[in-house]
Image (cartoon, rainbow, N blue to C red):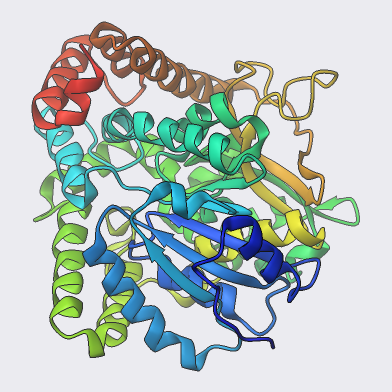
Length: 482
């Protein structure tokens, strides 16, 4: 493997020419992570550095508004690097323009307001008797209110500085954020989530097949989707799985939502359907918890960054301990009591966001990726093709299976969406699009309508109170809504 430092004093064209002279045609020259001081960045670094990674990132540029968080992340990566097969060179900056210049791929991982913003999103909702969760219901709409303006500014800067780059959006709530960024970047921005593809892979394993051996039908919005078929040689194996308690026990989503319920549906929902299908139970558990997930993460990550700053030599040790604790407690309110604080090994298999992102980059660069589940425009198949979900607007971002190659992302047609599934998708998307309209017009009234339209907000009075409370609690929201 060639190893050399990026000559920082060179202009962007000179630097890229230098790098490309040393790399293969399938390499990505520069990957920029916006929000590069974030807790998950070391996992991205590990995925990029694996010996069997199909592409090589020669420069990983981390951009963040916090130099302190960048310093901690750099310390973790520096301690990880000796154990990895081919780690990329890491550069850090607080300058967004410098970070984007020359980028081939951009990861958007921003968290406007940090974990304390999430705490506010959750607590305001719970105080008003509605679900307080980061991406679902009132909490998700509040997160979007403070994040969309920043995401759109990022999209405009990418369009100005790196129009050739692909943008892969990690930022939640991913569907709304990607939809807002698509107004600027069109099909050059795609959202990823590890829960849909993780579900498909677990189901494939449960029926004795590798993911590459199956074809499947999945459709939904971000954190609101359903695996409806899983076929091998034209035979749907999902009904047999749903009828088998022993095999179904290996599927986290089935345990969370209940065996009888997934059988009644005849399909396997994304785990986030717990908040819709078991709304009362979810709300009760959250209200009875000593702390919200946001409070837990705010305390845990605050402690990690403080400890790593105080003792940089042990930054990796601190990160690994915090990561294990974080993953073990993910969505604990949705799981049975005996699994509340330690997830099963099969539930966390599959690589997470970072592996999905690497596979997407591989497909875009080499054409080697298989079928993935990605967040794309409802009209992404092109003007001559029907909408993926005809009940939704053309601009809506939906999650469907896609093939990926050097020419881009190619969504597959999916089976018709009907009944309660269509109703839920339509009502949630209506709330999301009203929220985007509210931000575009700076309208508190439209924001009220957006909250009232969401199926997990059961009162127009409460919807108005929520908007007022979020404006009072979050300066970015107050500034966006007049």
